Length: 431
View 1 (cartoon, helix red, strand yellow):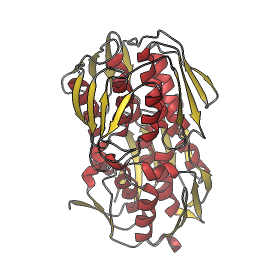
View 2 (view 1 turned 90 degrees about the horizontal axis):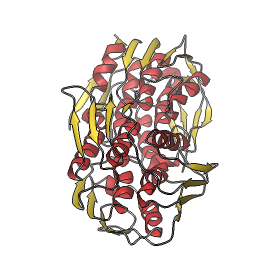
View 3 (view 1 turned 135 degrees about the vertical axis):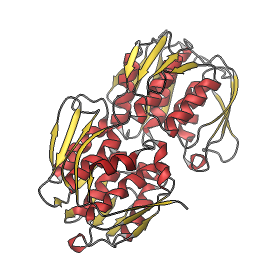
View 4 (view 1 turned 45 degrees about the vertical axis):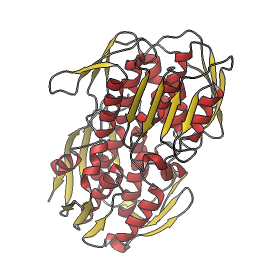
C-alpha cells in the first residue's frame, strides 16, 4: 500500500485558496443538465466525484465543454429529461452523483443501470427507492435489496403526486427528490418522516433550485411542495463556492498550530452550512474572524473541550474530533449516526485511528467521546489507515501539528474531493 510520511509541524500560518465545493459542484452540474439553455459553471471542483458526474452526463447525452485548462465549464442543458434512454453508468463512491441521478433517471422514462465501487454497494439507498416507487418508478435491486447496484425501467406514473421519505439516514434522499420532481410536471409534495438530518445540505439544494428557476414551498423541515409546470432555467453563469468542508482542515490547523491561517473562497455569505464549523472552533477557544469571502483562525494556546451536537455539520465534525486531541478535557461529539453510512463507517474508523495515537475513545451508536493523551503526548510515527475515505486522510494529517511524525496510508484517496490537499497543507506548515 502506498503511504505518505508527514514530518512534525511546529506551526501553521498562511493563506489557502479553496477548491470548489463538491456538494455545489455536482448539484449544479445536474441542474444545468436538466435546464433550458447553456450554463457557464465557474470554479468547478476538479475531483473524482465530479469526474463521475461529468462522465455520466456525457453518457446521458448532455453536452459540456471545458474552457481550456481552467476549472470553468459550459453545460448545454437538455431542457428536461435526459435524451439518452438506455445507458449504463459507473459512479465510483460518489454519493452526490449516485443519489440525485437515481431520482432523475427514475423519472426520465428510460432504461438505466447504475453501479459503483464495493463501498457504494454497501451504502443504503432503499429509502430513496421506496419514495420513488410511490410515484410509479420502476427500480430493481440487482444484488442486495436496499443497496446499489440498481436497474431502472420507464416509470408508470399515475395520479399520485405525494411521497414520503425518511429524513434520518441521509439528507441526500430528500435532495434527490427535490431536484428530480419538477420532471413530472405536476404539483408534488414530499413529506419527511422522522427528524431531518444535515439540514444545511438541504439548504444548499433549495438555494440552487431557486437559481435554476424552481420554486419550492415548505412547511418547516417536514413538508416540501413543488408547484406544477415548472421548468429548469439556466441562470447563465454560476460560480461554485470554495468547499467549506475542506476549509475545516486549514482552519483547524490555524487553531492548533497558532496561525493565523486564512481560507479564501467561503465566508459569511456562503450558502454552505459547514461554514458553521468556524463557530464550533471558536467554542473550543480559537480566535476566528470572518469576511464576505474568507475565514481566518488562530490561537494562543491549547484548545478547550466541548460537548456538542454536530448533526448540522457531519463532514466537518470529523475535524473537531482531531481538534479534540489538542484540547484540555474530554470532548463529546453527538448526533452523528450518519457517519456510519458515509464513505466508510466513520464512527468506527475514527475511534480506531484515534486510539492508535494514544487517545481514549468511547464509541456510541451516534457519538464519540474523546480523551486526549496526557500532555498531548501522541504515539509517534502512528500509521493511520484511511479506509478509502478522503476525509480520514485529511483529518489525520493534522496530527503532525502535535510534534510527531505520522504516516497516512493510501494518501491518494484525497483525489475524491481534494487532489492537491497535501501540497496545500505543506504551504502553511512551518517545520
